[in-house]
Image (cartoon, rainbow, N blue to C red; front, side):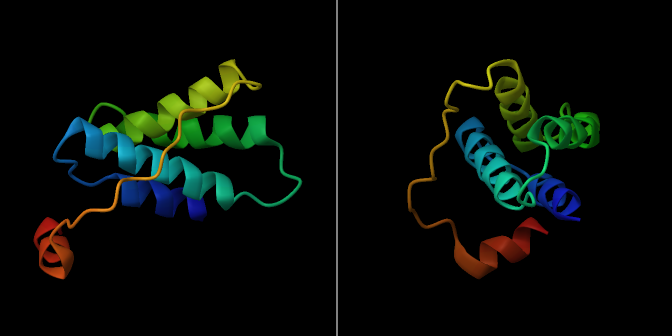
Length: 100
């Protein structure tokens, strides 16, 4: 359930590559934080990648999400480059309504 919600949230128009990177990283952190304790990370990461793969070409944030999954599977002991977005105004409620 959380995976579907995360993917739906990542399927938005990202105005810039930087914003796509921010959204993809936030999606990864949300997905990771929602995994049940004791779950098999490798299994869950592969499952998430297989669900997200059809959207890589059309949604840049999903591509970033998938790249993070792949990187974590290839190099499990290497830290990922994850950062929180810098606080800035993005238009508030009116901008969110216009993006739907």
